[in-house]
Length: 266
Image (tube, rainbow, N blue to C red):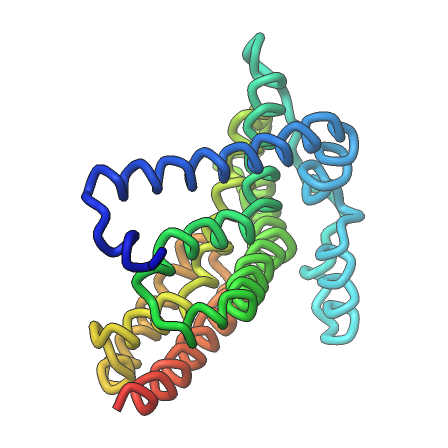
């Protein structure tokens, strides 16, 4: 009876229902953001400013790889830049923005759960039972993308931009707003990019796309992935491969997911 009432709801009723899902999601984001705001020292000194120091985990691993491969250029001894705050409200604004980003990342599983609750009346019983498995999978891919962006893309980009000079007389002094914004954008970009298999799952399920299409344009996807890797990474082959290979594996995994769903639909 309850599902019948939901199916007979008007457009305004659906908007009202969606509004409450959004409000609950925003409350959870606010709570995690508030906790992040209180943990200022750990958030900024350890996490956000971590890639700006040469003792960062990624730089140490690259140096060990450089020793094994006898490639000393992989060892990053020093990052030639300083971080400044040129605006009166710069540090406080970045504190608020970074807290909100951390709050969003931590509350992402709950946000997806609220989204699922909104669309669940249109699904069958078996699909509704998969909610917890789907939340785990979506959260796993999102957090994997966040970690990939933070430990791989962010350090490579910071290292390249910090050591890039038009002339030795020009000193790199980055503003805190530019530094924090760049990190947040790159990390969130990777988090959402890692949702690609989930998107392909639903697109295949609703017969919008299939694995034949993805296999047909595999070569085109490789070119696009290499192009994106060249844009967001330093201009060297090693860095580009570190970015391109995981994205290509995601594409191949999406083909596999699409094939399973396509056969199940038939």
